[in-house]
Amino acid sequence: MNDSVQNMRVRTVLVICIFFFSACTGLTHRISEESKEFRSSTEANAIISTLKSQNHSLETIKGLGRISFLENQEKGMTARIAWVASTPDKIRITLSSVAGQPVISAASDGQWVYFYSHAKGDFYKKRPTNSNMKRFFTISFKSEDIVTVLLGRVPVVKYFSAILMEDRSLEHRSGKSLESSEASFPKEEIKRKTDGRVLLLKNKWGAIREKIYLNDVLDAHKIEMFNSAGRLLYRIELIKMQTIQSHRVPYRLKVSDDNGAGFRLELDRYWADATVSPSVFTLTPP
Image 1 (cartoon, rainbow, N blue to C red):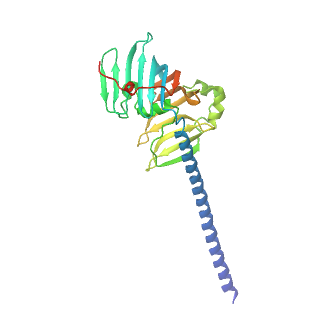
Image 2: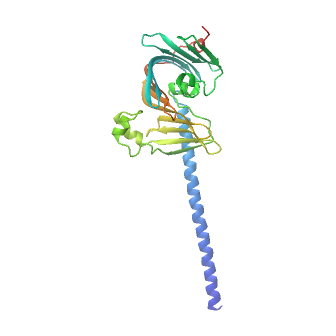
Image 3: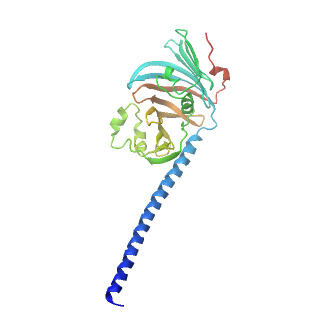
């Protein structure tokens, strides 16, 4: 065998080896990425299951507090609020004046949504839709979502895929700027909230329908809901929590849309496992 033939065979073997090595490297890279994505998705779904099971035994609640309505992030009218809620979507809310006189009542029994103006005598009854609550709270959201939050749970949309990512939304912000923000956190909570993660819940077309922001112990402190076009519907910020009968429930929260409209709610009194009659969630014409 002459040298030229031998050299040709050596070059051929080298080309084949290089091609094979490159293919294996690419395959290894893809497997690594897929495994990482699989682990991320698996962990995300496990966290969602945990969030859904929070306060699973809590079904009925009552509360008293204060509500401040917002417009462009500015606080407007403040009123006393009394509320009763029952899982999954039953709620009754009454706003009262400083003198304690009822001003407006709203209710949902799961079948109908009711509004009654005590001052004007106006009565309103309609089938529940995402926009029904806008008449009362100035933003559109489902009564089921606010009931879920008041029960100390996290509303979760129907989703096709879930991804868990690092939450960098608070990086490079000083403690002073955090404390001065509308949804400021106590000093001792600032550090742990900067070390959090965020769950992205997507539909089958890949559009994000919900973001759930978690701290380092995987407690949700902010939820953002989006429509199918990716536009923010509303944001729920759990500013401060409290423990009632071993249940971790909100003490102070804020709900707002992308324009800064919405409300802040502070729950002074909270009764868990309250005895509630179904008739409470129905309003009748005056």
